Image (cartoon, rainbow, N blue to C red; front, side, top):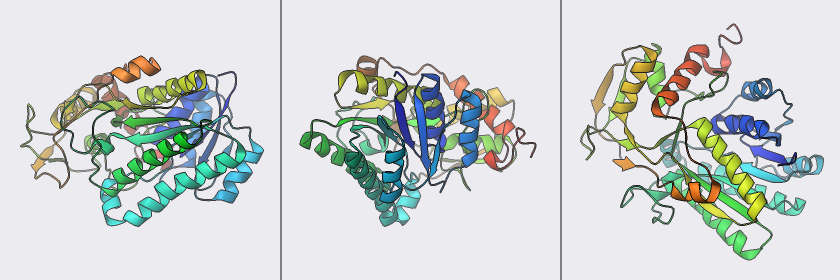
Length: 346
């Protein structure tokens, strides 16, 4: 690491902020970039408080080439971790051009600016969404890709663009990390997931019901071929996920080779298992309603994690209890997210 400087795009977001903390703890220096379209500057102030380290912040969009050129001129960046992107599946179906512009065109602009600045180490935040409805589980990295929505297609288009870039120029060292389902929060309760409006993800919704902010959890589909009929996913603690990025960065600097790796736990939990686990840690009863499946939802999805262990010397360490307990601590300390919390006295 030797003080290498890492640019983190989307640094104020859920995964970005946790990764900044882990990078700083590992001895890297971090430069943050975010347009704050679905995140908060407060998250980065708390990253600085947790780490005791300064994080230079650039308020900019990855589609703004002039701003990126200025940033790269100001900082001797060694590598870029690219989180900046829109991520709501339903929204992507309604506004596909917006997703392709933000995610694909944004990545293209960022890569062009990196090339001009002579920076060739790039770590990309991809998603298990690229696997679509898998033929088998656990899902290995070699599984067929079969995207079912514009969000997933934007991730796959970027993956293919990165593969072409590495084939064209041996200077590029690119890691692609396919996440499964990030949950939880930092153990301090100072940073966590802060969704705008109605949460798209399960655990924030469960926690808001537990806190009395919403009436009940809608469980979409109770007739899947799973032990209790509800969908099964590979939930991974966000801190484990963040540490996976640190491991991937070490690999990139040490080996000089590119890779595509799953980041998950290798086991699945059903919606009802997650709900019961959250009840146990929160001590709250969480009402739920079984409703029809959503179009495009799949029954079972969890990762084959062997390559991450072999290539990155990384594996997830936190269990379902830690995932739920840490998320509940974040919810309890920050009932209105970053906009008002016990920490700020609001």
